[in-house]
Image 1 (cartoon, helix red, strand yellow):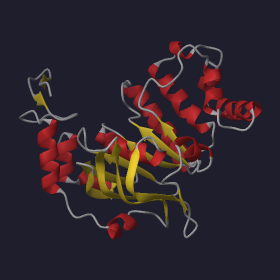
Image 2 (tube, helix red, strand yellow):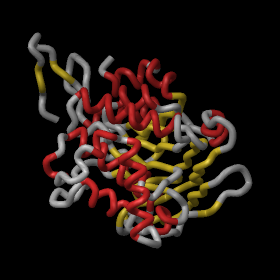
Image 3 (cartoon, one colour):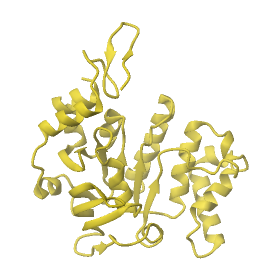
Length: 292
């Protein structure tokens, strides 16, 4: 990691905050491993309000023959939010990929539903998870179609609907929700600001009316004012529409401030789990990820 200095000459460390020395990703990984506790299923269950809506048990997953996640378990309730933080290479995005069907699952299970009425979605394809299970994935960045209009991008979000008219109807509902997009509906996506593009990416996922949103790095590449806007939108989707959100966020402070639950990952396993507010107060998490 390159060394950065602010106007006062202080050296900045991993992601944010002033520290005495630069902390490399390898060193952060080593230090997180040192503070890792034996996170039990009972601990994960206690972090959930009511019954778990998304349940992962002993998941081993990765790419090709390479296993990245090692017996990882996860719990999040309906209408709750979970933020995954950790050093680069910890397996955070791999968790989202596994839930949505973008990688290989070697063992373990992913189940979705209330109470005893859970459906095993482990082996469903990404299209099936979106159309049948109501799981939507919002990619990191630059996933809009720049040469298409805002309206056409939204229609693309409904490509799995049975009839084109259904996608158009859902797109109109999105425009009703977000006048800022409605005002740009005939504009090509390439002329949108960074914040507007992120709003379009989120909105396109909503066209399929999902129950779970997998959100990968919502703040990446955005100015602070747009970051606040995006998190306000996600907050509204969670608390007013009851969406369940599983998020990966490198801006650990912002992610933990937003989320009900936080997991710190290292080397494909959960090192620390707690309420988002509690992790914000944890001195080890603060030292390694929050710049304090």
